Image (cartoon, rainbow, N blue to C red; front, side, top):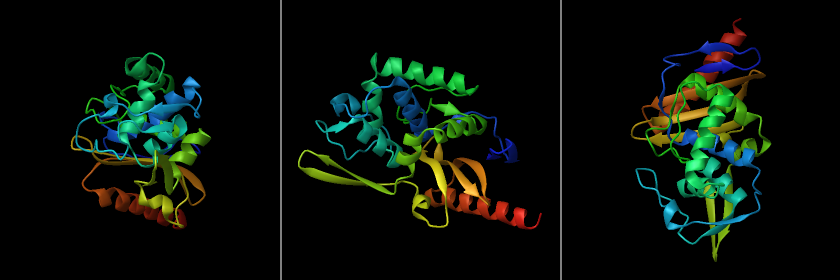
Length: 239
């Protein structure tokens, strides 16, 4: 789905009302719930065995015992899609992961996401689903948060874990491209969800939300985003 948020005009859509697995796009909702909860981003949290979530894509560079601030964990969860980081901030929510998931679903209802369902804070579960229409609402909400905007579009970010310095890079290569002005973004991938990409970006001075679900390959989603931008630019120039 491609949406011009200036006037909520749908510029393109295909199966946009069908709920599908969304993989790590989930982490945008995770971030909103963490920030809504008002827990200090300076609090130090520890990665535990509970955060060693399983599944394809569950690998993490954060070893059990790593201590980082809530803000650092949220930063690398959004930018580099680290699953242990996302799980840790959910686990440290009042009431733990069960309460966090309830808050995610409540937030989805507040945003008007009628088909969205969340069961975990990472997106590794195939039961985390939403339609492209719902994800336009989520991306628009995420774009209203300066913290989510800054964390999700950072090119790279380093943390100190014990004696080690670990550098994380953005999973979306477009944020580093000078010809793109991306306000907020998130990538995702699981076998069930395929390659996913959502973002709010400026195209021809218009704020546009792009939602791409179940792309064939890692580079296809980026190429699709480029094709969409070129199509909109050509359309604008040609009237």
